[in-house]
Image (tube, rainbow, N blue to C red; front, top):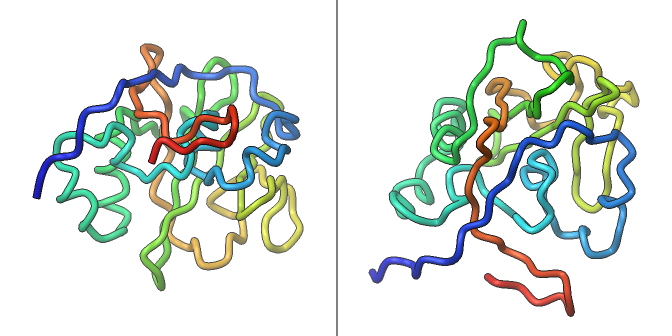
Length: 177
């Protein structure tokens, strides 16, 4: 199999001003942007998959690997995210995401911590400030997230940012891939 062509890389820098009810994420053009891209606050990441932001080295291995908590953590580190301990989770000066996987499906889900200390997530076409029990999410580990029942950990975007290949251009709705 031929390796995928290298695409121009962009950088996601930590965003320290995200709001729970962010109007840029409530538009028709972000309808098919997934929870990982939302947690990273980067709509041009499209339907990003953990470990495949750069679509380079180890593409085939990462694509075929299972979605266990260990695999998700490895994939996030491959993308450049840093794991942090729970006592380091604070909206002050950091861009924090919480990662989950499912014990029943090969799937993942992400939440992000906003500057107002509310965790939010993108589920299908909409943003959610509440879990499946209609509770505002202040502690992701205690949130009712349906099939996403395995907590992977907390991660942050480092100050130098992380690289990614854009998957979506919004002018005219053109997809890169």
